[in-house]
Length: 406
Image (cartoon, rainbow, N blue to C red):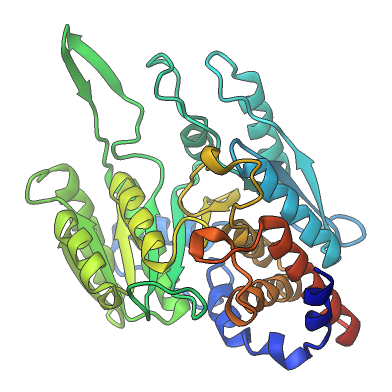
């Protein structure tokens, strides 16, 4: 690594600045930061619009300008990657302190989950690794990840899947913003065995939550300067449930004449994504479809190690990797890609108003991956996790020495 460190020392500030146009676009993923907004034209949406416009207000810094954030390391590669985030934050002198909370995924352990909920409510912002959901546990055991989202009403899951010039994939020029309703649908945790051998699993779609996520999507699309929103559904079969979701999307779309709205059936959507993903701009969908589509889109741009994710509600925001994988098979092997978790932490910093720190870290991540081509094996490289993080820290240290941050 000594030779590599020497090569990094020759880098100048313009090399990092080269990625700032990308950063400027990515920084807009923090909702609620734009003063521009729309007033709903339908009477029934006025209260909802006011609710959406005032959502996700970041907590103020504490005395000394520092923020405290809940940190849930999770399982698998989560502890390893969140540990690297802390290393990078120390290198970048980020004024954030972490309240670390371990959540146990075993059945019957509710105390650790309640502790995590208390920490997030106290700090209002969290960074988390994915917590394992073991499908072999009894049916009464609910996914801790799902319970976190529903308990905190983190109704909007936002994932930005964008092609990286340094990552070789089948498709280039992908730039898709995925907005997923995060609290209901097939993930409502309402299942029962009506008679022996017959299980009913309830899919819940409500007008209120469908209007809420649609309003959120159109408002965010306008802030990003996006031109088109595609609602993904299966209303040809689920005429009441998905039909209600689609109708709510159409109602909200009528208040945004500057944004083109269309819809697509989910099975056709997956085919279109793998054949011509560049046709999509913003994709809006219920919970389960969002889970599937976000994983497909992450695969299109290089895999689960690259796409960051964010979950927003009125009062709280939780940041994590976009595909929510535990990565147990590669845990503690020093080969996990730290990019998604680091970019998720940058989204968190932007939410807290620490934009210069977010840009600094994001720039270093981009240069390391796209210019220096120091990459982990999942995207064709031979570098270790530690080597990638060390290179990122070296770039940050050089930038800090050459350019005072105000």
